Amino acid sequence: MASSIDFDRFKVIPLSLTSICSCHSHHLPSTSSQFHHSSTRTLSLSRPRCSISRIGLFLDGSRVTEVSGIPRSIFLKHPRIITAVARAEPGHLFDDESKEEVNKHNSTPAGEIPTSELKEKNSQLKKRVVFGLGMGILVGGVVLTGGWVFTVALAAAVFVGAREYFELVRSRGIADGMTPPPRYVSRVCSVICALMPVVTLYLGHIDVSVTSAAFVVAMALLMQRRIPRFAQLTSAMFGLFYCGYLPCFWVKLRCGLAVPALNTRLGASWPIILGGPTQWTVGLVATLISISSIIAADTFAFVGGKAFGRTPLTNISPKKTWEGALAGLGGCIATSVVLSRTFCWPTSTLSAVAFGFLNFFGSLFGDLTESMIKRDAGVKDSGSLIPGHGGILDRVDSYIFTGALAYSFVKMLLPLYGV
Image 1 (cartoon, rainbow, N blue to C red):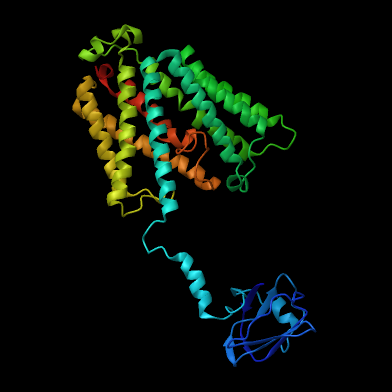
Image 2 (spheres, one colour):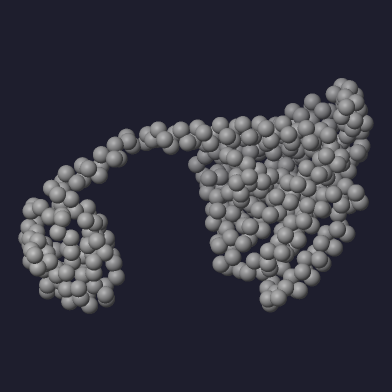
């Protein structure tokens, strides 16, 4: 029979517990403490005088109605301080053998990972590698194709990411502190976010569509049956900005910067099936360098943090360290410089270093922003769409702000777009 004992401060001498157990099939053995089980359903304890903390006994769910020498009101007034749980089995009550029985299940040496846990980690790693390679090949093909293929694929990812964002907003961790938008508003915002990249490719700009989208969402919130809340408006507007407006800059970067970049043999001999040499543009090269730099930043930051990480970077993401961040910065800049020499864009090494620097900080800021949202929501992953990786937002968080920074850098700071 399972018993739990709570200790407060009392001197315990022989006690009597009445109406505790109605089961006569288990007889407690006699050890250093003597137990007597009589037909009157009275259980008596006798033990040498000792000083312990608060005693309250609960056996098999039966309620303690009387303890000799201790008023029942004592158990109600004093909160639980220490709880000790014991397993009452023949020959093991208050016996050192019970410790051995418990400890034999913890026979794994200190610092050694159990076999089952090791297998699970290996399985997760295989999933991450397989699906990571698959996504890399797919994204590479979409980026090289460009045009409507790139835009529609981005719109699909934006829609799923927006759904994940609004589910995070509705999660218990965030919803406890504010009123989330109604579900129909969340769905409307997700659809609007998915349409923004398409409108950007068709019109060539995004300003009008964002203004129109904000107006539609505000009207939808004001027309709800319940009283609208300011928190609903802010979370919905941030969703439009975070999941819809920012990803549109990848369309402007890849498809909007159509200046030819034919300084390399690769560009001059670009296959006809992919559009021919005219498709080898500044937008394509800048997109390839930016995405590759972000991948390098994540990889170097992970490896550097595992190997040398000692100093926490921020409380938002405790696993991130300054050492890992510096390794990621170095890897990002190195990748940007190497690819700039390969593609002959940008022609200035200083511009390539600045481009890598900007890509790194955009990816880090995006990663920390999504970590902050997940931390408030009380979840580890934004979703479970990609096995071993989590949701879409978990994979693209580093790219959300980077597209806007990369486009602004090429458009405004590089003379002649870096050609």
